Length: 474
Image 1 (cartoon, helix red, strand yellow):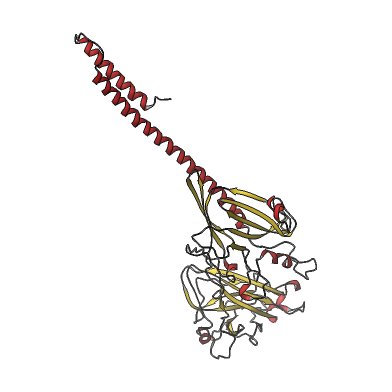
Image 2 (tube, rainbow, N blue to C red):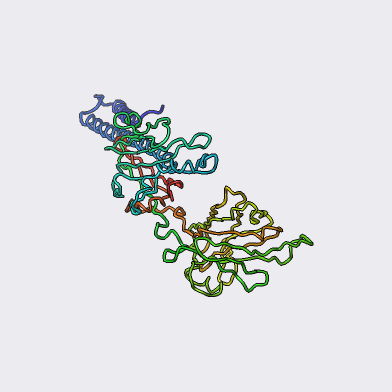
């Protein structure tokens, strides 16, 4: 190891003193040594050097201790944030391999998974809470610490089957952050208390996560779309039902029997491209195209109706949207629609401009009709976004058949909806943590802000945690 700076300073003073004494002796002075004044000067110099060096050493030691405390506090904060993220990311319910009973008659998972929601079955619509989390206090101040963060999740077996619903609570008491797990429904698991465990017995399943916690704040992502503006079509002001109108005026686009409007629309009389003699696909393909409209008595051409503000939509850049509908075929096992051949026959849904042109930014989504009785009514869901805002476009179904039988069948489209997706972006409002009960199910991420102190020094962690399985039940 190298010598300390204080050693070199004292040595230098000592050597200078000895040199001076030596010069006095050589010069022939009758007396050798130091005068009192010289000695006092030298002692003063050494004292100043020692004080300065000591202060520097003290400051260096303090800085090293502070740095070590800051690093330790930061390490604790980051470790706590990592544990919190593992819990919260699992919030809510996904699916289960045994979601249907053996005979297909019931959904055995639906009765169990209700307990993963906070209060989804409340008789009051305003009080229903289909989310899987809650705060204590219910609407904490964004500038104050959170007393408790409570979340529920479904635990699965290694084979993907339902095992239990667990409730995990992160609580801050004073400066101590702890974690408790208790089973709400199902079988107990590792480090999770059995159902209805309370009091001292529950304390056995409470783990102290960290002490010296100065700040524990959890901010929910403000839903990109709230309950009031999630649904785009059918509009809230409309009847809530649909009708379909055929596009006409083009040689290869033929009219289609779309029946009456209502909760669902039955389509039949599809155009066929099958040529029994040659079995070849024609150069100009015949197809049907129907526009989806609000169910009303308004008359007009397909293009005029598409131009009606109730029937066309604007999709904004950077937002995510969802199109969904049910496909139904008649119960008769010989129904010709079930003879649909993927890769040859064509069914698709997409968007069109008022002049009938395709929307280039949104491709058509291909779908197939149900082929077995168990899937008699099957929901189709498509999600999309646009790179640039698209204005005033209408939803349309396109059909084109090339096999001998499928075009002679019928098909029903029902529960057609276009929605904004609340999870498209994560926006956090630093001034509030309040989200209404009805909109809590649309929260798809949380921001954790944590600060821990060690020996007076603070370490912080900030992490965004996506929670795609939080809500909704309906």
